[in-house]
Every structure is written in structure tokens, then in C-alpha cells.
Image (cartoon, rainbow, N blue to C red; front, side, top):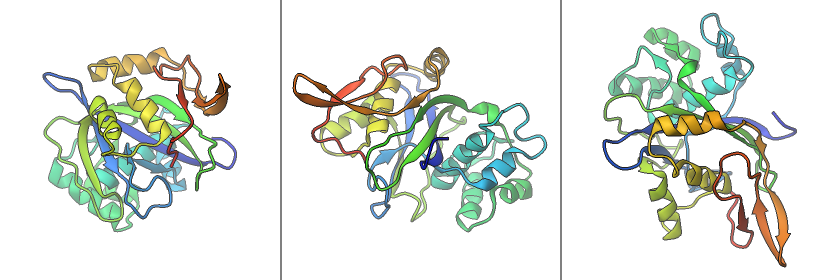
Length: 253
């Protein structure tokens, strides 16, 4: 992780549909939050020391490498914010997942919550997708690892808890981008660029192939002047279809 930025992890949960583009699990951040209040984002949050400790436990992070703690954090945050259980085995049903969520919200350690229920983690269920390290003058700076994972089978209705987020739903990437264009949703820069990339693909398999086709390098946007105008710019070799956007009016969180 980089500099003074807060280490974080986020999970893009992808649900294939029989027809039409896949849906993504999105959460709306509570209005009172210091960072990106009211924005539509993917579930996630900062990586805690306990996440690294759990990743280092025998049988949990074996072979997962140095980033195992980030994978644990992505799974934990998704469960805590939405009660959608990804990367947990055996796969709990929705009611059991809600009970796990309640235990986490009550402050119980993730390792204890899993152990008490007879669950373990399947870190291989998550695939690295990107790493964003913006340096905008936001209230807080994050060094965020993005992961993708297939949604668990069944009709999972997100369950939100007051204080974690104000809403959660399944939406296609194109639908979220359209909502922002109509002024019905707020997106921070990394989320917008990621949704544009995801919107290129018609299935989880295609998204996973895209992840494998591009390196995981820190994406740190910079300001570039073109024909007298300023643009927020990102590298052009990481799979993002839009790599520059006019600086005026950008909401960065």
C-alpha cells in the first residue's frame, strides 16, 4: 500500500442474468459519512489488522499471498454492509447470512463469527480486478484494492443496517451510469471509470477474463491540459474505455 493513504478493499459482486447484462451489488453510502457521502459505490472499507490476522490463520490464506488480508476485508465488509455472503463456506442461506451480519454489526470479531457458525473462508472466490490510489484533495485518501466475485446462487436481497449504508440494490453498470446522467445518483471518479469498464462485458466470465488480461497497477489520476482545457486522466493500458474526462464539475468524494 502507498504513502499515507488508508489501505482498503472493495468487492464487485456480479450476478449473471438469463437475458441482459449482469447486475452488480451497489450500496449507497450514508449521508453523514466523511468520505463520499451519498455516493453509489461497491461494498468495501478499510483493511483492519484483524483481517491480516485472520488471513494468516492456518487453512485460511494458504497460498493467497501478501494480499490475503485485503481479500478477507472485502468479504467481511460486503457481509456487514449487505448480508450477501461471498467467499464463505459452506454457503449460508440468506437468514444465516443476516445473522452473521448482525453479529458483525454488534462488534463481534469476524474470526469468532465464522468459527461460532462453523464457517471458513474461500479466498479463491475473489479475483483481483484493479487498484485505485487517487491523490485528489479529498477528506480521506484510500489505497483500494478492487476484487470481483460471482454472486452466490439464489435470489439474494441486500439487507442494510443503519449506519453502514442507506440503501443497497442490484443494478447493471449501464443503469447506474444512466442514473448519474439523469442526476438521480452520485458517483465518485473511480466508481464511474470502473462501471464504464464493467459495462463492456455481458457476463461474469467476460469480466473475469478482462481482469486476467490487464495488470493490477495503482491507478492514480492526474490533471492534464489539452487545448487549454484540464482533464482528469488515467493510464490507457488497464482496460478502461474512458481514460480522460473534463475536470470541470467532477465530484471526487
